[in-house]
Length: 277
Ligand code: SAM
Image (cartoon, rainbow, N blue to C red; front, top):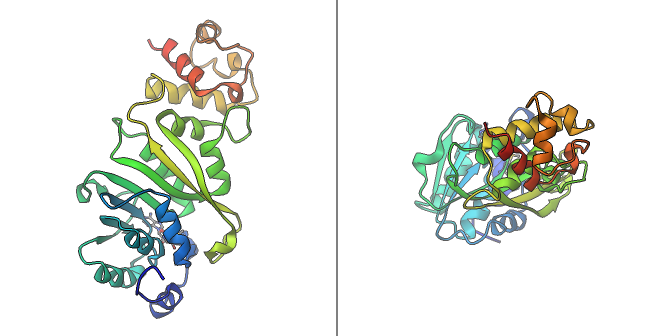
């Protein structure tokens, strides 16, 4: 056992926490597994952790048991608060729970650097939160690393390499400013209730500055245009980006007949540099 609190099945029964689809609830009840996910975020002893969607608190308990300095947990479903209050009592001063929507709450005023984010996210907001965390107004962001559960297919898009079907905007947006790897795969049965698809935990570690120089807005625009028509040659897919796009592609050492999927991060950044006005 990782702590002396009751098993999660008992917690769920005692507080009548039947999972609701509307909240994207698929709970992890195996505390050895949640402790393992917590460990994949590294040594948390001198770290504040932001957790989105603690639910009945399986991962929260994993984080606290593995020594996190503090955990700030944001939970939208008020039914979970009494169960989380029991965890707060078992770890005095180390857990703060905020009831609300992680998409609208600004957690920064509650956190002290260094901060890491660890979460078994509701699938319906996972990608949106990832994009927000990867695209702050200034870099480096408030977090050192993100350790996040995604549907396996989304996890594969985050770590994808050029020349693969999964390669696209998500891979480039993350890999431009961070190292990303899949650290754990989970079958549907690891969750209660079991979702239809497999899941994976992705660990994303920020770089102190982007891997290659580029203007974030231009890079985003050119990648979006390229992958929106990923089967087309770039000279056609990027026509709307610049009137002399063939010259710009050649200046960035990219064949105008190439397709978005074949172009690595270094060359997307080079292209966005030659497109600077
Ligand atoms: N962390 C728990 C675990 O691993 O068992 C629960 C994970 S469950 C996939 C997602 C959790 O996020 C649920 O507890 C749900 O109520 C919560 N949630 C859903 N939408 C949310 C939002 N917009 N803001 C904060 N929490 C949310």
